[in-house]
Each structure stands twice: as C-alpha cells, then as structure tokens.
Image 1 (cartoon, rainbow, N blue to C red):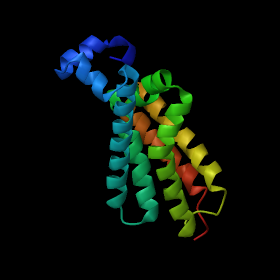
Image 2 (image 1 turned 90 degrees about the vertical axis):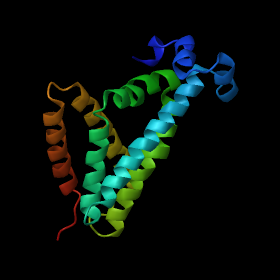
Image 3 (image 1 turned 60 degrees about the horizontal axis):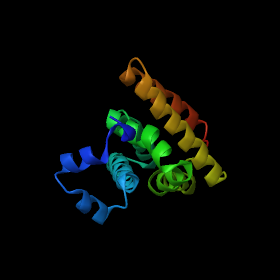
Length: 171
C-alpha cells in the first residue's frame, strides 16, 4: 500500500508507539516518509557497492553495480517508495536532492573511475551521469511493470551493456 493509503493512526498502531512518540521524532507523516525514503536509498547504495566490490575489475564492477540497482528496484516496495510515492509526497526537488546524494553521486564517481582508468572516453561527467541515471531509472520502472520482469531485466542489461560499450576506449 502506498503513502496516501496509510493513515497516521495505522502507522502508530503498527509501530506500537504513541502519536506523541511519532511527533517527538518526526514533524509529521511526510517527515517520517522522508526518513524511510533515505533508508531505502542507503540500502540500494549498499547493494550496489557490495556487488561492485565482488567484481574482478573496474568495468565489471560498474556493470555489476548497474545490475544491482535494477535488481533491487524489482522489489515492489522499493519501486513504490522510490519511484511512485517519493516524488509525489516529497516533491521533485527534494526527491532529486536525495537521489543525487545516494544515487547520482555514486554513479558519477563510478563513471569518473572508468574515465580515469582509461576505460571510457573522456567526456563531460555531469552530462554523462545525468543521462545514464535517467536511463536507469526509466529502465527500473519499465522492468517493474513488464509482463516478465526477469526477462525485461536481462533485456535492459543487454541493451545497457551495448550502450556502455559505445563509451569504451579502443583497446
């Protein structure tokens, strides 16, 4: 269920806290939701980092991180929080600030590592990171709503790898 389908009363009952305790820690339901959104973004970032760390080299680490992001977004709760409720509840500007902190900055760092290692052609980093972030967020939404999410994930990864190969330097 989404943000608008859950009342404050239901939240405090489920959490087994009083309304006063909720308002002691959060200014309201939207403030609590912001904390949940940030926690989910941290979880996604951790999964990306863990996948990347297990890869044998920088290129494979970047691809593993991309796959981890898309796989994580298959979770209906994560998809609902990150892509449906958060922009509507928090507004686009706050959603972007949080996404930049936990997603875009990490993506930018990974791309910078690839450029610095000579694995992809030097190019404007901000433009590249924003383009790739937009493509991956859209792919996550497409995968989630696909008739066969696992097949869509594989198709998205194949296509993403083809796109990224176009950025590679000549070996």
